[in-house]
Length: 360
Image (cartoon, rainbow, N blue to C red; front, side, top):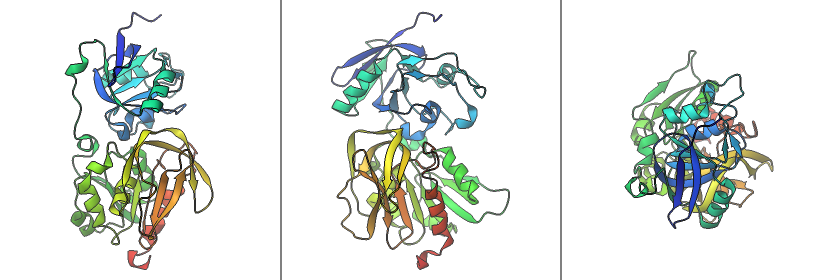
């Protein structure tokens, strides 16, 4: 039997308010509210740096039933501001669970709220767009809250980190970290790549001077249009080294190639988004989390080809340069909703590194 729970209020900028009950004690929060349609995978969502600063509404009605599994963590901390659900299950039934979702959130001081009308919140966001809100346990607190400003600084590695292999590596990959998920690093290592992870402030001169075979631009949170230094850095790499961009990395690469970025009304958030590969005709089931995309009329250059499209709204989901070994996708190939629909993208990156840049 549950003890008496404290009331929490989710209040949007226009005054619309939803009421719920606290199931995990944490800090009151302010941030953008998004909904995610995944049926499972809440732990990956909690620890995905792409969600930094956001409050996440899960549309699946019961959350917490398989607890927390240590091996499924995707970063060094809980990244979201708050978790908003219909019903919380405090008694997980999974032999790999090390703790409950409640204890995991409370250790990170992240507020968890249940009893919300998540269907109504989702419909509200679909109608009004992804707006900011406050989540408080007192009506008087919401004016006192402050937002985190430099979101990339909050998620990027502060120092250069090396991930060597036990055996001799075939390739040396530079990862520009704007909020990378750990599974990307694991997949690169499985493909016999020695990985060096750089802060998002790294320069092109450093990347080109250290003998790397390729550069991966990682996923991450926030508005890519504010990352002008990254766009300029990538422009200096074009034609000199193979580049693979994922999500925010895709947006940064697209802008470096002359494209423009626009904000979606309520974004793409979930693990059931169908993407069509225009080069093969195959449809991939993908995991996504972003509020920004490359505009469909982005590219005047005929050297940039759209390779993938989102079947839900026809937005650009992948691009490739026709002269240089450069490509990117607007989804998470390291996730496994397909489960292996998008694994070929990492193999493509490896194949680009196998051929000298001047021969591609």
